[in-house]
Amino acid sequence: MLVMGMLDLMAADLAVPVSAVGALVTANALGIALGGPLLTFLTARLDRRPVLLAALAVLTALNLLPALGAGLEAFIAARIAIGAVEGLFIAAAITTATSIVPAERAGRAMAVVISGFAVSGAVGMPLGRLLGEAVGWRVSFLAVVLAAAAVLLIAWFLVPRVPAESGVGMLGQLRFALAPRVLAVLAVGVLLFAGLAAAMTYLVPVLGAAGVSGPWIGLCLMGYGVAAAVGSFGGGRFADAGAARAIVIGAVGVAVSLTALVLWGANPVVAVPVVLVLSMCSAGVTSPWQHRVEHLAGPGAILAASLPASAGNLGDAVGAFTGGHAIDTGGLPAAVLAAVVLAVIAVAAAIASRTLRSAHAPRSEPVPAPEPEPVGVH
Image 1 (cartoon, helix red, strand yellow):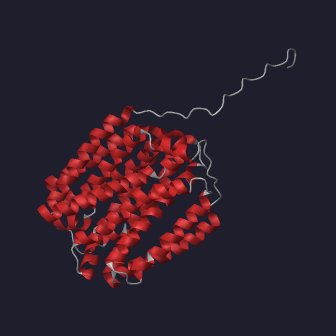
Image 2 (spheres, helix red, strand yellow):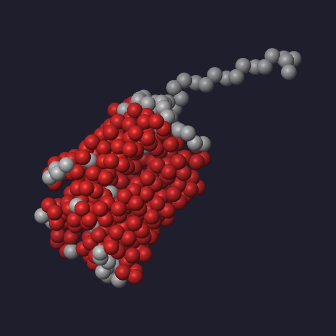
Image 3 (cartoon, one colour):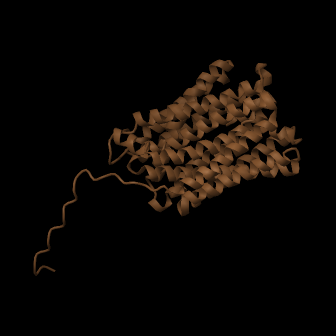
């Protein structure tokens, strides 16, 4: 997320267009979309603890590249690998969280994990922006590496063993996780997050078009992250209460907010609150979407846990590309308009998917009938 807050700083230092730096967002998203499920599938039988620790170690090491002076091309390649292990980490973390709470609190457990991304937007992205403005964007990535190393050390002592138990084998995981009903709900998220990314990948230019500049940019980025954190935590409760309904409500909120940006985005009094509402609605959808996908996958939930992040980042990649192309051809308003079109389609798909129901795995063997109680024994 740090890249989104420093697009202009990185583009100026590397002497490339902003859309070229936007390729870092696309690369990371594609890594999560393609590599995350693959790594999750290959590690589905492993204890979650070593999976989490290994993913953190790789993320820490690869983020050293920009800190040590790597060019844009090398960093783009690294972001693909970073995305893959990020997708693995998300799935393993969510599986760990939901394994230690009652089923009726699964949505809130997912929200705790997912809210980490929102908090990173509220704290890490604006602080990284301020640090990048003061001493250079590469120093911001060095700070990320140091923080990640500290988290890795803490996780080594605190993360418990969580054996990956499942009632079906690896092929069964594939069959249930990739069932048509699951893919249909995943498609809703792809459309929704593509619409969001088409505009929000270029959040700093969007704020600039509304007349927001200087220190106010960092403050707005922090507000964006705080709003996302609020939406993410709230989304967990909505997921437990009714995930399908929560997805529809969140998608409508995103579409309405983007439409308001098209109509009044040049006015900072309107644009800034709308961006905050947009952040809250989009983050609020994440936990219900995750909950819905895992519920529909049934026995394939271990692999399915990686799919929302994968699909969401596929949407981010599509949206970042769409937004960049729109900016190159029609300017920033064209990117926001493209975002509206994608979000409206997502609303229609979300409404259509509400009727989907989960199917359960067939029993591998019949359950024996209970033995009759001997007469006279009480």
